[in-house]
Image (cartoon, rainbow, N blue to C red; front, side, top):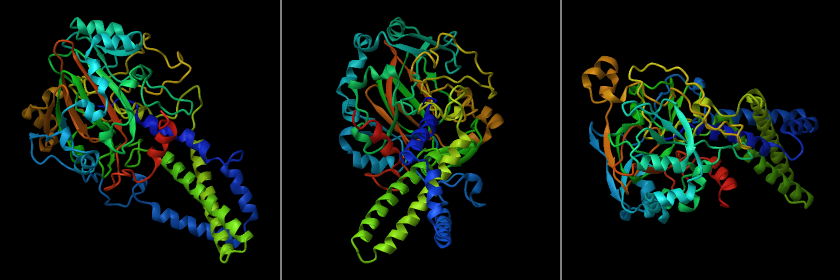
Length: 521
């Protein structure tokens, strides 16, 4: 699943993008004002006409839902769907696939699949086998502080927001003794110097030498978050029915996981807590108040990035045109005028981005750029939840917000601000209790639409992994024998390009962001 960190990444990016949008010492507003002083009425009219054309031609995929034409479908998912109820998910051997074929046959089609074979080949991570050793884990991070969920009894469930801080070594000892009361889920992720969430929590960084940031199998997908999950639920603890917001590569290192899956095509039948806004063609789900592009970027961040690229392009055109005019090249004057118009349009877009930023900025003491409903990476989308968290709200009613646990590190305890905030009753969870999913009589009485949804099933054994595209609903049962259960997962920003292994996203928003921050690592 995921954590509660996702919208954080998308919205946090805007803070840094604003800096990129500024031309050195002068803001876009100042530059635009200077340009306007130099323009003639005719050039102003040209700019207005160009802007109008741009607005008209760009209103498509990323257009706000409330401005879409009447009759546009709410659910535009076009990927693979479950062919029949109780379908058994396909299993493939890692030796039979390549990154290109995996993208073509599964990622592109938005088709989940179990991958059997060496995890070292799947994730290019030979040291993952060492994680089965308690001594190895203790040596690497025994003194690291982690936040774990705890329940009051083995009949109780996780997922209630009851958290406790302890040393990782202490948790290892508890699990070794058979303790089933504590569970390691998504850890707090800190903001970097640019205000954007890190790729992983400080605890996970202790193990960073054991795995690559970008597994070879996943080709050119861009990672969003990396997590580890650990517990000791031999009776099959349930995650509750939910979906995440990112593509998930889930590697089972100990124990096993049983998945019940529903495609995004069945979203309207899932009785989500959030009010559905739309389902993109690639399956990415948006709820009211948290609209994104199909690849998961906040709309304003996406607009700002697009404006920045247009400005860079216009600057290059302008510089070349000025040089050509100086050298007397034929047609240079016309190209110069066109470049000046393009620059003017770009600056206008930057001005719009700045104005939007001023409207949305919160003061530093009272909040962040991260939405509460999408602020936790792919374990929760802003709530991509851990696959082992239990959700026992069987009556489908909202719970009161839990009291703050004083044992959990506060965001002020570190010089770097924490940006993942656990959200109670997140949008991406179903109101259907996990313990009635097989009870047709109860479903018919309380959640009748569920009976028309088609479920697929799979079991992921130790040493296997599951690829699960973004926004596939799933309920997961975790089983751990002696030594508990242990898993690691990667979340990736969902691709939205129709069929392009080399460039799986329709813009360079996420590839550029990752390159700037992590490619040097």
